[in-house]
Every structure is written in C-alpha cells, then in structure tokens.
Length: 263
Image (cartoon, rainbow, N blue to C red):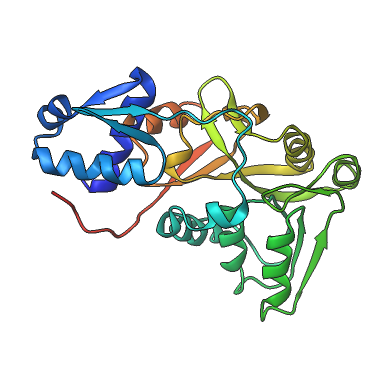
C-alpha cells in the first residue's frame, strides 16, 4: 500500500472514531512504528489530525470554514493534476461546459488547451483568467457576475439569475466535501445556491474531488451523490469510500498518481 493510501485510511478511521492509536495502526498495516508516526506527521502537517501521546485525534473543521484560494492551491497538487488530465478526456470539441470555482477545477481548466471550439461558462475569476491566457483561440468564455467569496467564486442572485437561463452539455463541479447523506457540499451558503443553479443548467454533472474531500461536510448541499453522472477522484480514495460512491454515482473514475511507496 502506498503511503498516501495508508494515510487516507488512517484519516478516515480518525474521523470515524475520533482518534487512532499508533500500536493499533502498526498491527493493522503491518508496518513499523516509525512509518505510522511519519504518516501522522504528514496528516498533522496538513492540519487534519492533532498528534497526542500514543496516537492522534481527528481535527474536524467547522461546516462554515472556507480556506482561501492560495491556501487550497498548494494541497494535493499531484492528485489534482491527475484528476484534471483524466477529466479533460471527457470534453469534446464544440461543446458548451460549465466550470465551478475551486482549485481542482482551476487545474482542470488548464488541461483544456487542446480542445477547440468550446463555450465555457464559469463563476470563477481564477478559472476565467486561466482560460483567457490559454493559446486556444477558438473558444468563448462567459464569466458570471456576483459577489466574490474567499475562494474567488462569484455567487449570489446575479450569478444564479444568469445561470438559470443557460443550457450546458456538461458541468464540472469542484466541492469542499463529499459524504454519504449530505452529498456534495460547500461551506458557503451563497456558493451552494449558485452551484446548484450551475448543476441544474447542464445535461450531465461531473464532480472533480481528490480523496481528501471524502468525509468532509460543508454547511450547504450542492447535490446528492446520486445526482452525479461521473465522479473523478484519485487512487488515494479508501476502498470503503470507493464502494459507497460506486453504489450511488453513475460512474466512478480513478486517476492514478505516481508516488513512491513509503515504509
């Protein structure tokens, strides 16, 4: 098992039970005490667990916590790039697509340079900037209006009104969290309303979310899991999460991420 896969399982267990013990993880994974402690160091460095004597406790963010774009853009970069490349293969020339705000969707927008003739609607200032700087000239980019959030999304009544008048082929949605029950969520209620309008404007919904989004719940639900035609994630997603998603979404696509095995 790769280090990042093991860490994802450790994090899932910490969130489920509230805490994990080094001794139990050593037995479960059949690795050394030092390997587990390195895993906990990595998770603690990301702010996902808090190390305590003999193990770690989960750090569960508030449902309204909304990190800024810069803070999120440096997290899981390899996973986001792998997801973006895989998702770009779903886009056909000449189609009309929507792209929501977020660092994963921003990475995805950068992967569209070889797809000509697109009409792209987005409520993300960052995504619009990437598309404007692209060498691909045969495209139309539409940026909705709205009020700017910490993640550089444009939200609110203006954005919702414009999106409800559109008819798109595909929407690529970035999310703050995904979980059984709450579905795909965001910590910003205005962004939740805007993203729901974006989802409703398209024939197909494609969710882009790396494995760390599993088990995270924001205050506002954008869509239920069964509303997603495709979910594109990375191979760090634990088996239990894969089973849960596979049973509910139309198709689960797993992007491989090259990473050396640890321990």
